[in-house]
Image (tube, rainbow over all chains, first blue to last red; front, side, top):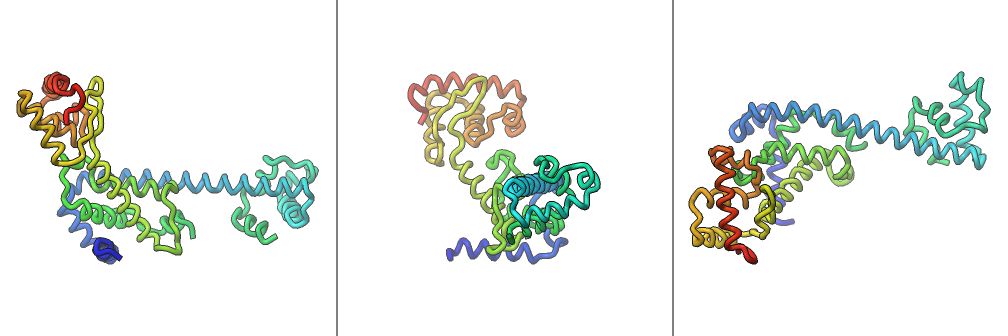
Length: 128
Length: 172
């Protein structure tokens, strides 16, 4: 390990372990805190939006992947995913009463699974 | 645990202060003129954006989320310094009129000596120095040198004529 990295490690470790009040004081000695606070408030909002957008995007990607896998399972008649989908469909009155199981479109599969625990469903499919 | 899950557990403002103080220390008192107006918190902001949008990927087996974020800021600062050393290769003012590469103090001094030899006055030399530090917008130059924007335009025209004279190939 180079000396430079060790110094950097010491610096990050010191800053990470120092309490917020001390960091505030130290920061105030180096930057214009009025300007900093304005930027910090804006940044918190921006990053908050970005986090939500990323989460939504990931959820959409997972939803789409799941729907695709269920759709393929329906076509192939793969036992476990089909059984899972039947069970999920049974909890949705609109689909259970009005729709033929083997004629489900990808959009309808999305409707059935969208409010479920997607990660859990994905894990169950992977266990197959 | 994903990065977003771990990141959401952090208290944003105290974390931002720590990362910004780290950036302050790493920038080592670089003043506004040299940094082109970029503040430590601006570099931290960019590092956070890249971490959240997935440009930089966290490996939980390698580091904690905080260590990862310090690393993101470190990379951002390193890239920033690389850019500073390379500025500018070209810039726009009405149309680009400098297209040369000034990467070292020595090259900068040589360029300034040539300009002086061609009769450039102190105002032209000051603007030239600001331009090669990467600040190219007349409004920003005006603020930096504390002269009016109109004067910036006038001096830049003089500087351009001077550069045209000596830049048959390159100003270096």
